[in-house]
Image (cartoon, rainbow, N blue to C red; front, side, top):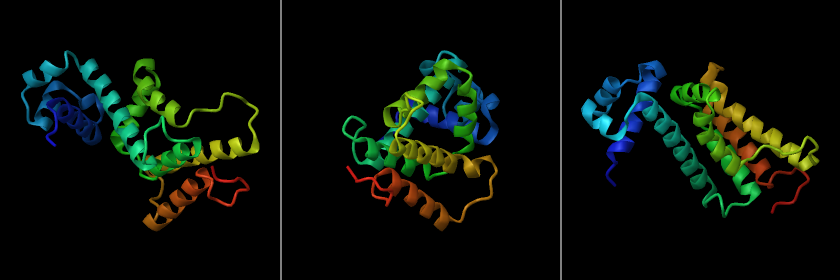
Length: 187
C-alpha cells in the first residue's frame, strides 16, 4: 500500500525529532527528510504548531494500532484482561527518543497530551477510586511495571538482555491476562 503524503511528512517529522530533537522540527528539516518541497508541507500543515499537533495525533494512532494488533481485536471488543495484556505486550518495546521527547513536550500541553491520554484511557484507564480490590491493585501495579519497562532503557538504564526483557514482558502479560498463578481465575 502506498503511503500518503501526510503520513510521509509525519513520519519524517518523527525522524527529525529522533535524530535532532523537537527544536529541529522546521518546515525545511521535515521537507528535506521527506524529500518534498516546503510548499508540499505547507499544503498539509499551515504552521509548525499544526505539524507538531498532527505528529502527536499520528503517534497516538500508531500506539492504538499496536495495541489492537497485540490484542487481536479492537478496544471495543477486548475485555479488561485482554486490554491490559495488550498494553503490557506493547510496552515490552523500548521507547524511542522521539516518543519520549514528544511525551515530555505534551505533558504541559492539554491539547497535545489528550491524544495519548485518550488511547490510554480506552485501553487501561487509571483507577477511579483510592480503594481498590486486591486484584485491581495488582493489575494497576503490573501496568505501572509495564510503563517502567517501556521507559527503562530509554532513560539510560542498563540495557536488558533481550531474553530477560522477553521473560519480564511475558510475565507481565501472563499476570495481566489472568493466566498467571495469582489466585484469580482467567476471564
